[in-house]
Image (tube, rainbow, N blue to C red; front, side):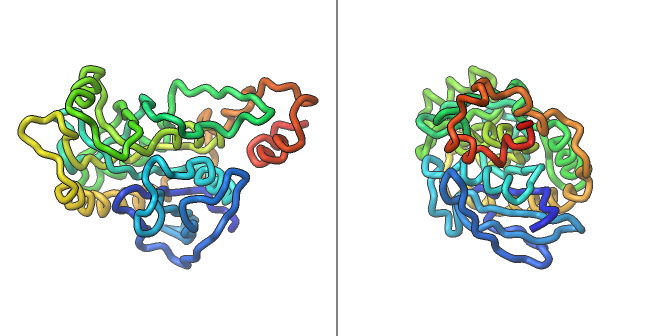
Length: 286
């Protein structure tokens, strides 16, 4: 499992990565439980890739049921440094037409009760999160998309709701008044955990509909599934174009997010907490 430095987590419609050579599946256990499914590992354009279907094979896990911590920890166990999150979203702006792709660079988290950190249980840590996505990774994805047939939007705000229901009209109009660009149910706390794991993270958001705010467009599952099918092919092409453009050595701050994060004095950290977070923190222990 050496040199698996790129991960892809697939959302609705993206349950496998085509063109993976030497494909094999890897089952992992983590200190935070079992991931959504087995990881699919292979080679794409000379780079080792690990793919995970976020909702599991057959789409059996709701957003509220996703084992976010296990999923991200599993990627870190495999050695992943770049994580591409493919997510179906609703568009909150007229100019983001269903079928377009967005690379959000900000999030508003409206989820409730989802474990959102690896810390706790005897160890306290705080990471900087003012810039929640990796601009280097996003720019690579944007360039790859522009070379293909995709209509791309670089930057924007993703509001993450709990679900599994879609928004009420009042909620949708409220989010619009905040100036958000897209709405989804899965990228929080995923992005938070990726930063705590020191993994570069970027979302490739596939706009499928106008939520429910648009007076002339009705949202239906059938309509969403048709657009998802087209968008997934585009997303796979963007990923294929991107993997060999990612630098071998990272220069962004993502890879040092935990350097000064821990507040708990070393002598106060329990042995259980030390073991649970050893994968994340051992490189900072002297």
